Amino acid sequence: MNPPSRPRRRALLGVVAGAVLLPALLGGCSTSTPASPPTRDTPSAATQADAGVPTPTPTATATATPTPTAEPVDPVQAYADARLATMTLQQKIASMFMLHVPGTDPAVIRSFVDRYQPGGLILMGDNVPSPPEGLGALIPQFSSDSGLPLLVGIDQEGGIVRRIPTDTAPSARELRPEVPFATEESFSARADLLARLAVSINFGIVADQTADTSSFIYSRVLGTTPQSAADRVAAAVTGEKGTVLSTLKHFPGHGAAPGDSHSSIPASDIGLDEWRATHAVPFAAGIAAGAELVMTGHLRFSAVDELPASLSPRWNSILREELGFTGIVITDDMRMLQDSGEPQFADAAANTVAAIAAGNTMVMFVLPADPASIGADPQHLVDAVAAAVADGRLSEATITDAARQLLVERRLLSGQTTPFAG
Image (cartoon, rainbow, N blue to C red; front, top):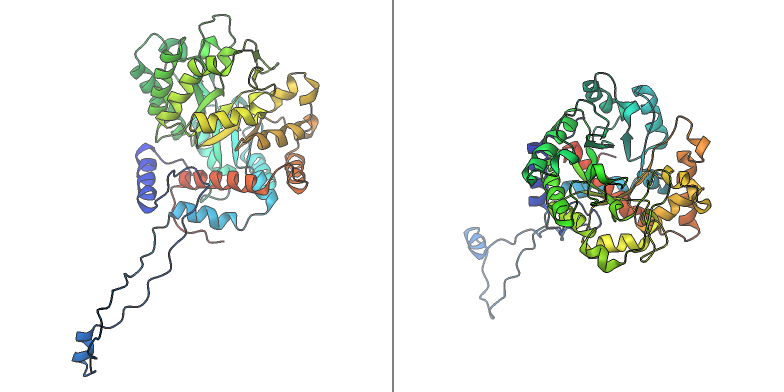
């Protein structure tokens, strides 16, 4: 099923928001407990008298007990909770993966999805047919459950990073000298294109900032100063809002760390105070504008944590507690850690456990045709996470909370609010 259009998704969010008293619709971590059902009303004295029933003379003033009323129930949250109750630990873990399956054969991709049950798929260039408009007919075939669609993401920044070649909206390099509203218009057009093709997530908003023309990320940033980047990042989120889910990348900021994170772990020695005044600013603006996802980068800020941010509990805590982000945190492609050449990141399963322990909601792998060739067979990864739960390295509550949050978002994408049928 195609993701809801901009008006349809906004209307659905309005229905759900009106039905539940929750602090955050997409947080997925809390539930409303219905109050006890109202008791049956007692017949009034007048009714009793009309029926010939003697009415006793009251001897004291009685205090009326208010009839309790049931609290509103969020139908999407209720669906997620009911579905979650039927899932095994391994199914919950599997739902936390966003994976890539090469090619455009819907039967092959459907078989993969049925076998491994990931929560999402990331599309690369090899998944885009010619003409690209054919993608809209392919994606609905990837899953048999229209009531719980996959999260389908794509890197569609525009310019040099675009999987859909027919996207002619201005790129970051073209938008930098323009007023922020031009960025909003560009990303609105881009979101409309993706929604027509049944894509639900755009990994397209680069919230990094740098003025260094030699930087790997320079040509893709929306601003060369913290504020210019922040203004355009917020505008990009506004442009996509209600049409596709927006992602800010690469947290905590690729612009601070020279090098290419596809083949190394770029490093920076800046401290937290400097980061807060610079590289944090565009991310904070995008979060305030309503971005639903943040992508953690394989970036090392040694003054904060020697671990790459994608594996760092410290950086996840800063994202959640300092920047107030309550949405989905997803890693950049985990293969990049293996490709860095650093021996401690050679094991895909160990990296996966560390990423979930750090606080990521989803773990992304851009897999080859034979995932086992890189030690990343999806079942092997799921088993590794389950083993970490069994021996206490991970809590089952961590898995359950992440799975619930993803179920809520996927159910919202379906546009349905009917109860889970089991």
